[in-house]
Amino acid sequence: QVQLVESGGGLVQAGGSLRLSCVASGSIGRITAMAWYRQAPGKQRELVATITPGGTRNYASSVKGRFTISRDNAITVSLQMDSLIPEDTAVYYCNLNSIRQGVLSDYWGQGTQVTVSS
Image (cartoon, rainbow, N blue to C red; front, side):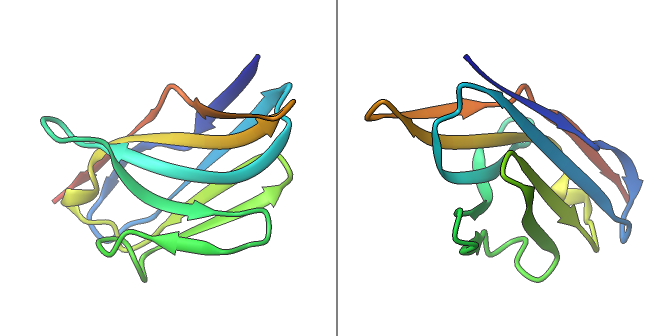
């Protein structure tokens, strides 16, 4: 079983910064990508940023230039969020895709709340 544990959410004023971290544990297999998603109240979950084992990064246009995704080690992914705006308020979820015994699997953390006040 794979577990993803997020940390680092909280309340911050507009213009501030937060850093989210996600640690994976368990029978992970070979990681193909790690990502952060977010879901605001009344909206669908959306992709925020992804990173591959080779270091290729992709960002949603709404966060490009303000957020930075990084892998701190083989099982930890972080999201540095700068210049936060109220529209960034959401529950942020860590996501991991991996292949184990030939099977591609998709795992999710429980989410961490980020609230940006104006």
